[in-house]
Amino acid sequence: MRGGRVQDGTGSAAVALRNATVAFKLAGGRVYTAVEQASLDVADGEFVAIVGPTGCGKSTLLNVAAGLLRPAVGEARIFGAPLPGLNADAGYLFQADALFPWKTAIDNVAIGLEIAGAPRADALSQAQGWLETVGLGAFAQRYPHMLSGGQRKRIGLAQVLIRDPKILLMDEPFGPLDAQTRQIMGNLLLELWSKHRKAVLFVTHDLEEAIALADRVVIMSAGPSSRIIGDWRVDLPRPRDIFEIRLTHEFHALHREIWTTLREQVMKAYGAVA
Ligand SMILES: Nc1ncnc2c1ncn2[C@@H]1O[C@H](COP(=O)(O)OP(=O)(O)OP(=O)(O)O)[C@@H](O)[C@H]1O
Image 1 (cartoon, helix red, strand yellow):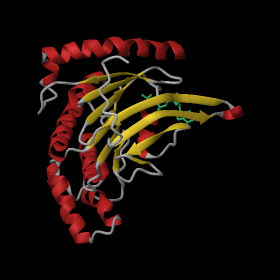
Image 2: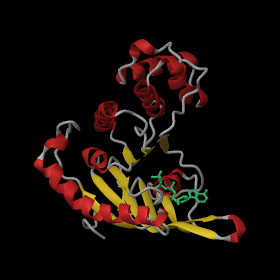
Image 3: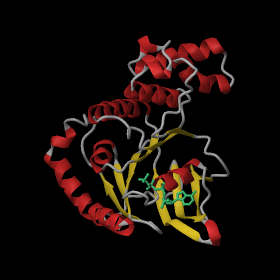
Image 4: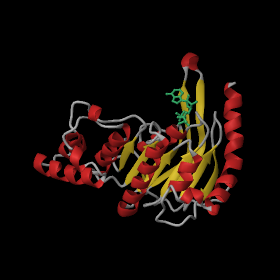
């Protein structure tokens, strides 16, 4: 393992994947082993990024933590307890918008509370507060098609955070956004994370984004049978401005070190599909 082991191994982590092997059944009875013996801890309040070449199994690992996939071998534990089904402690933010097109921004944010049984007036009042937190207080009555991609992502964040999950599972959440909007969203995410201190598992193919945001960067090898091959602590100071942090010598040094390992896997992944 490159970068040194930095997992706590105490079993009380917010998310603990233990020797998780995930295999998919293919046509003709064949089996594709996507991820093999992956062990990973995310401590409560910790921000961990998973990076790896395309198709290596990043989303697969996230889906195990979400309880959407059961590993063939190994297990996922959430705050020390085995995960029996869907992870009720987690909120998810995916690359695609999960907004209801027929609901206004405020209704999209309020819906999680309403489904959980909150009175509508209370849900709307909290939703308005969250819209203000993400800088969209004046956009409450807009429908998703009347918002930009970045604004829809802000609504998505508010929609997840209003439910106050202990764990955030994020799969390339800013993937479809332009470079500037990605950085603005990254700063907003860091601001909210430092205030509310959730455990975050953040999947990205972008090593710079991973280092700028996370406390730890975990690298996966090219698939099939992808493994976790590196785990680096990011000792850059916080609070961070992700525009500024990328300009520092320390950022560049860490990027160069991790990229040496990641590059090899990216080349392997492309070799495999060529
Ligand atoms: N339901 C499935 N059935 C068969 N194979 C699958 C299934 N889901 C994922 N896979 C395969 O498992 C591997 C890992 O997929 P996964 O989506 O986790 O990768 P990823 O690292 O998130 O990829 P990307 O960066 O391209 O989004 C891929 O080779 C994919 O084709």
